[in-house]
Image 1: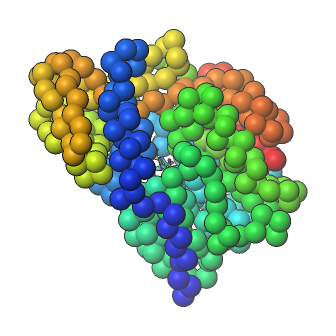
Image 2: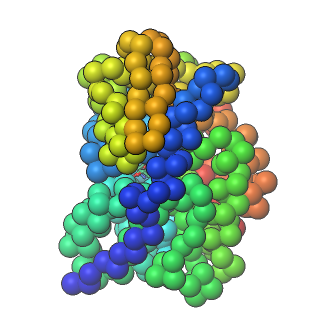
Length: 330
Ligand SMILES: C[S@@+](CC[C@H](N)C(=O)[O-])C[C@H]1O[C@@H](n2cnc3c(N)ncnc32)[C@H](O)[C@@H]1O
């Protein structure tokens, strides 16, 4: 049996992470207020809570995306190159990529994620299921730069299939998404057949969207509030779970779901070297999840340097779809 190679480029003990978090926590109440980047939702427990979210009846994206892959696998097989290096961005439990191994027949699997401990564990389990496959884990925060290490394979040696499912692209503002997709385009390299297979959540009814991010069981609330423990660990803040409530809303103007933590009383958060007062009702903005139209996202891919994408959705008419999977050849 092969052993996964693991390259750890992300260390969450670093001072720059502390500084990034303090900058967000101390951001001026006007106009936006305090923010924490959604990447900090994913410590090992956060990754497990996200797995649980994907099982919830209200959370349609995972099920809908899986149904699109199942319904259109033949068309995808004809378009996507076999034997490519499969690079899974934000791999999580690696389950989605593994579910496509039979269809994609990758020569190598490269799983990239900021949640380093969780990725190490899941990749080791996956290697036991696919003992002959070359597997590489990369612990990386790609929100700054998508710098893949040499262990991910040399870009010129074969086709590269960048895989970014689950509508994780929605965590980026449109400007950030364009910047990121340009880096993905560069990471595809120059070998013919390379490209990006991506899952994108589409604009829909606000009630359905808000339920998906505020389920009746309270798992998404736990996922959001778990960020408090992670920030305390990373910064040394004294945030108390009991003081913060989960809130999700669809901001139609910006076409995004927003998640916030709302202070339940007037309080002061302290950390070594600083503090910040919050009034009751004041928020920490913890996640955006932008919802796209197929036309809008295709245009973004074009601006990032990709060819006209092939698009599959869960509806006969593309505009009626709730979720889309796109293959954008580089
Ligand atoms: C919404 S989950 C999707 C997981 C899985 N790909 C799926 O579709 O079910 C987002 C994943 O991206 C990872 N992630 C979030 N921000 C990241 C960043 N800046 N760099 C690397 N990974 C990140 C998280 O740890 C998590 O596993």
